[in-house]
Length: 167
Image (tube, rainbow, N blue to C red):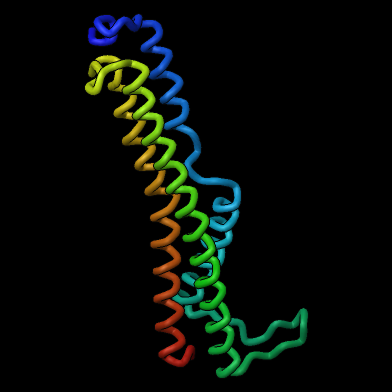
């Protein structure tokens, strides 16, 4: 074992890897981005439902509003603006969290290499680290790419409805 040759016991090396894995497996998305993601997915789901069903309100009785065809187009434009707002807000927060998480993973990997004393860690001990990196990559994809794709799909649907006159 290289760590033993470098004067590091297997127990210490195992502790270093465990501490590092804890950092790599932390939640990559912060509370602010999570709230924005939830709002983005909610408003996007509403937009997709309106697009696919064609159901637009004609009357909002609780406030006494009746929507004409022109009003429905204005409603769709407003909904599109809300989707764009939450998309941009989530993208900004998400990019910040993603960069922060990537920096943490990079710094953790470098710290592991320094503490273990080997540029090429022993594969048997680091197999779990490789799995953790793959899982965290999937988590980043799920937490960031999926909501952005859903919002983009909703935006396209709203644009198509607006251009068709929202009949």
